[in-house]
Length: 190
Image 1 (cartoon, helix red, strand yellow):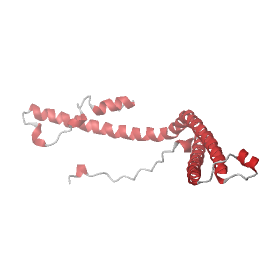
Image 2 (image 1 turned 180 degrees about the vertical axis):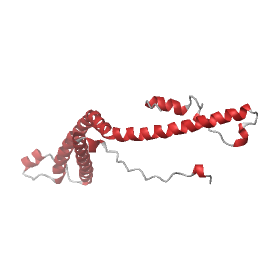
Image 3 (image 1 turned 120 degrees about the vertical axis):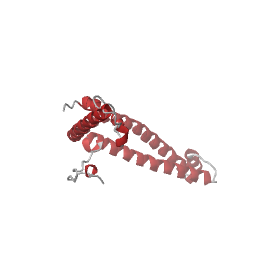
């Protein structure tokens, strides 16, 4: 392998942990935790509702309302007790669904401040890495211009650049190509 293609042995970059929005903002984290609690409660209520519906459907005893059973001197039947439980579970389920919608709105409202806090935490690392990239691209841009100047001289002598192998056309024009535009966009002045 040609020596100019070998990668320099530099120390590995320190790993950077991009914090989650919950790590950046306690309010956002508490809302996510509350959403988890509500979802778990709703899941359990749905399972209970299904089981009660199955129990009621499987119960073949006559359907007697508790008030009628009391007038007859009978105790409440399992079927009527399950119907009362089912009504309570459905009411609780409706409350959980309403609370879930409310918590989703609160999470949407809390996201913007959490994102701002995350940006403040990540911005220094982003700027450092972008600066490193721009510095490296400035070196690449200079090498690209130097190679382009040599290619122009070769073409001027009617030798033909195609005899020398691959050319970096993907970089665009050597004077104002992709690298130059990116560096300008980043506000990097070499």
